[in-house]
Image (tube, rainbow, N blue to C red; front, side, top):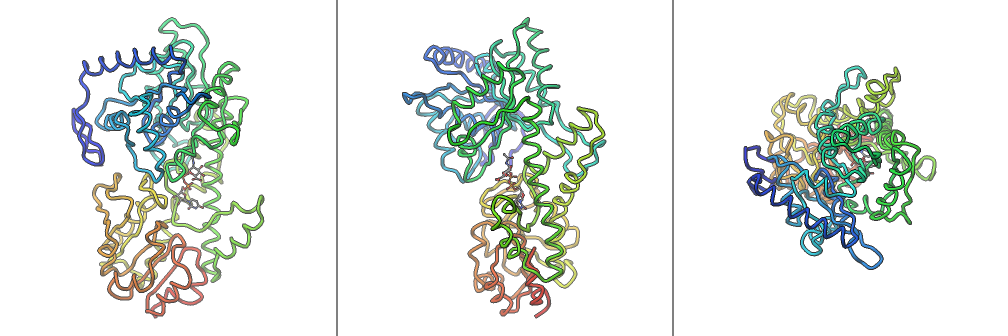
Length: 520
Ligand code: SAJ
C-alpha cells in the first residue's frame, strides 16, 4: 500500500524516498544530457519511456537490453515518471536496477539490473527534460476509465486529462525529428484526433514546423511468467500517421522485438491499430461471457461442462479457443477496452453505433462472481449470517499478485453485506492495495481453521495440491467447499463428500447430479 504523504514517496515494502529537490532534479537533468549526447555520439538511439508502470518498466528494460550485431547496446534508455508520492518510488527502484513490481518472470529483474548497474544504459528520472534528449519517446502512461460498471454509451467517460498532460509534456520538450510511439490502450481515433493535434499545438508554440513523427503500436504486455517474452518475442500491430512515421516505427520496433519469429503487422492507419487492441480484448471478454451462460445451463442439466469443452477443443483452428467456466473477469485490460471502443463510437466519432453484445458481455463478466456467491449460499444452507467463509485467492489471475479490478472484490463485498465472517487468503497478495480495510492472510491453515465454507476463487498452485485429508485437517471438521475455477478434481471431491463435506463447482453439473451440494 503506497502511503500518500507530502514530500515522501513510499514503496509497497515501506521504503521511503524523499521527493527530489529542484536542485537535485536540475543536476540529474544535466547528467542525463551529457550522457545522452555521449550515447548518441557512440551511435546509440536515445529512448525515453514515459510511465514506469506495469508496461513502461518492462519496455524500458527490453529496449535497454537490445543489442546490435557486435553485441553493443543499441539504445540509451531513460525511464520517466512523476516526482509525486505515488510515482517517485518507482523511478528510484528502476534507477537502482530493481523492479518496482513483483512478477514471476526472473528475466525482468535481470534485465533491469543489467541495464541500470552493468551496462549503465538504463536510467530513470522525473525530469521531463529527458523527452528533449530522445530520438524516440515511448508513451506508456495509462489512460483510465474511471467507471467500469456502467456500459450505457451516453454515460461513458474516460479520464483523458492526465494522459493529455503527459502528451503535452512530450510536446513541450521533444526534438523536432523525434518519433513519438504511443503504446497505451486508447480509444480508436485518439491518436489521430487527439494526440497528434495536441503534440502539434505544443510544437507550434516552440516554432517547430517540421512534420510530427507519430505512430501507434498497442502494447501486449502480460505481467506474468511471460512478462519479458510478451514484449521481445510477441506479435505487434502498428501504424504511423504518415509514411515517414510508419517507417521510423517499424525500424524502432524491429530493434528490440524478434520480428523474425513474430513479424510486425502494419496497419493502414493508427485508428486501425487502436482497434486491433480494443477488438482483441473485447473478443476475449465476450468469449468468457459467452461460456458463463452455458455454465449456468450445464449445472442445471447436471453436466460436467469441462468435459464438454474438452470434446469441443479438439477441433483445432475453429473451436479450440472456447473458454472454461470461471469466477469472474478482472485485470486492467478486459474490463475496460470494450468501453474505450464504445466511447470512440459515441463521443469521438459521434456515431449511433452501440456495441450491444460487447457491452452485455462486460456486464455478464462483472456479475459472474454472483454465481459463485449463490453456490456458496446454497452449500451453507441458504444464509451467510455469522458463517465463516474463507476466500482462497483475491488476485485476478493465478500465480500473480495483481488485484486490479479483481472479481474477488465484488464477491467479498457481497459476502460482507449478507453477514458472513470473511477470511481472506492469497499467497501472492500480502496487502490488498485497493482494499486497505481488508487484511489478507498468508498462512492457509490459519485462514481455513474453523471455516464453515471455503471458496477456491483463484487457481493458485498451492490450492491445487490440497488433499481431502489436508483440507479436513486444516478446517478442523467437514465443511463446505465451492470450486470457482476447476481447482478440485473429481477424485478429491468424492473423497471430501465421503468425509461429509458439501461441495459445489462452477461448471460442475455432475457434482449436482451426485447431490454434493446437499447436506450429506
Ligand atoms: N478469464 C476467465 N476465463 C478465461 C480466461 C480468463 O474467466 O478463459 C478471466 C481471468 O480469470 C481474469 C480475466 O479473465 O480475471 C483476464 O484474464 P486474461 O487471461 O485475459 O489476462 P489479462 O487481463 O492480463 O489479459 C491480457 C491481455 N493482454 C493484453 O491486453 C496485452 C489479453 O489480450 C491476453 O489474452 C491475456 O493477457 C493473456 O492471454 O494472458
